[in-house]
Amino acid sequence: MADTAIFDVDGTLVDTNYQHALAWFRAFRRYDITLPIWRLHRGVGMGGDVYVPELAGQDVEEAHGDDLRQAWTEEFDQMIGEIQAVEGAHELLQDVKDRGFKVVLASSGKSEHVEAFLDLIDGKSIAEAWTTSEDAETSKPAPDLVQVALAKVGGASGVMVGDSVFDAIAAGKVDVPTIAVRTGGFSIGELEDAGAVRVFDSLVELRQNLDDTALARPSS
Image (tube, rainbow, N blue to C red):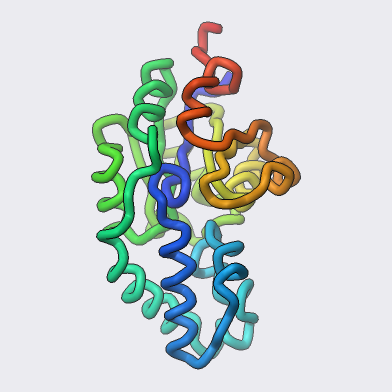
């Protein structure tokens, strides 16, 4: 039985995905590269090291990869004050902790961004640990951050809660089941095809149905 709940941060606990997509659009435009925002949004959830070659190609990565990631940071920083917690985020985390699970907040974001997001959900008062981009060499859909999250709290078995297909794919590579929420804009079918064992429309709905998931009370 699972002893650790691993929560994705961006798009799951804080509503950031559309700001991410717009920041990437503006970053690419600095280099006269125009990609459709809908396609950029579909890639949100991957780390920047994977995002650029996946969305724009290896040639763009080799020519501009690091500069694009720096440009993205500058563009995203201008919007960070607009970002809000997803409804029910803090309450869900508290309920899961109260059930006896170790809670880890998993992000591949920059440490200063993660700090701001944890403040929005009062995450530090609940979570035993959290991750940033400094904790893994390769970001999602690689499983590194999931493994780091478990290791940080000495977890034997985890459950992932995320909003993207990349969360489910990454967790599945290390046999961690994923409960997905649709706050990232992916469909139920897409999330299930990626490996999610349950899909909920919102964190509020997930919280209302915790005891029907792998995050039920360990004694149940």
